[in-house]
Image (cartoon, rainbow, N blue to C red):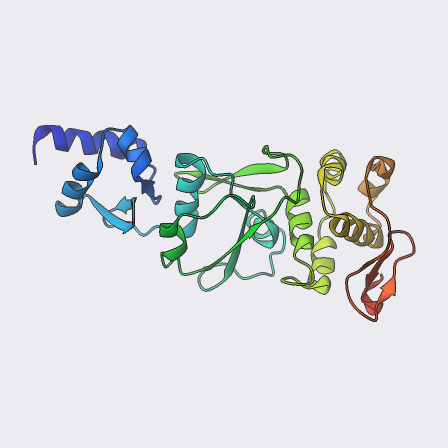
Length: 257
């Protein structure tokens, strides 16, 4: 290997966090074009994990290392959300972590996962939900999680629980959502208020308030619900349930409190 190639890969490795994927567009910005990357493959510097995606040779990269590339190198507005985000922050601790689990990512309807990310065997099942659940397309209700050599973006508990409720009852159960809400004793009322005002789903807003009021949390009293658009008419979460008289949504009879 020439001095140029050797020095170039060393420069790249300094900027490339351990245990993450590097995409070709980012590598090209560092001066490593496709032809040079092929040379690095041959000389065992890197290993290709899909079209235009590489990892350091000898490193095992988990799905969060792939997500890092989506967020930081490709700039895609995709984040860890719902139940997975709650688990990452110490809530929902009774949910399994590790291999062969389902992890939930959220993005906007026009944002697609790259083929290399979808097809790579991450040893977890990736469930990607695309939705305009919130009007704001900024990082409202999102935070960072330190993964050691890199950070990933995920929902705060306040946003994550609303994302989980968005998937009730199709993908998540009401009973499980209620159990999770019972552990969210310290939600921040200002952020809850902002997210409720920003939320586009009438079902999510009504269901959130039914569960929050059932738990009788102190932070609920600090909300100004006159600023929240709860919509008109009734909503049915389940057939044969009981209608909540305040928020006009039908929930399971034995789960009213």
